[in-house]
Image (tube, rainbow, N blue to C red; front, side, top):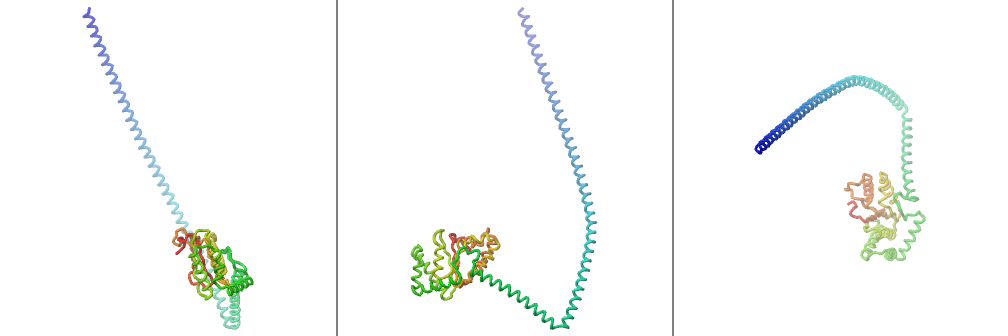
Length: 348
């Protein structure tokens, strides 16, 4: 009995093992079949994709070739039309040129006829010709004289009753007041002497002793230059804002008996292309001063900057050249005093 049960169990075990082996073999076969099917599908999809891509390339190439052929056809048609139009244009142009030439020839013939008749008349009537030329010369001379007289009158009026646009402040007065002022100044100098006058003028100027001595010496040199009709030495005042540069310039003008005029370098830039005209007008006005003029230029670096600076405009260059034109040589009619707090920015 026991032996029979063992045999039965062994038989069942063998059957289970055989079933398991068959199941594993079946699963392996199914998996291989599925992989083969998937591989076949992928290969089929790749083949289809390659075929579609090739077809798309063929279609695109055919479309490009059609576009090129169409463009070539259009270009050929345009070129043919332009050649035909060019021929028509040349014929029309030649006709216009021939017509213009005929008109010019007719005008030249007419002018030659008038000139010949005029020469014949002039040869027969020389006295009338000389009279006509004389009257014509007098008319041109009168026009030139009137223009120059108007220019001179404008300059004289500007010098006597007006001031240039660039001048902000001036001590120039009318002729009667100027004569009275000159007489008073002359009497004071004859009575008190130059040294005492200088001490009175510069007594309210607060400077260190060495610097004040230099300013007084400068005033004395300017006064002697004016007295002996010698050229003035232009001056540069350098210092921070609010240190009295304008006051020193006014005192210097008062000490030398000159008229005083103040302008700002910052007023030149906004004038643009008109700056050159205004600078010439300023110096013409300065030369009309009967006592000589001390021209004080505040913020000189605003338009007297270095010409090598790349940001300097063409108008600023022209304004600087106009100033150098008037101040480049010896001057006996005005003294130029420049003031700045950035002396390193000035043109050399």
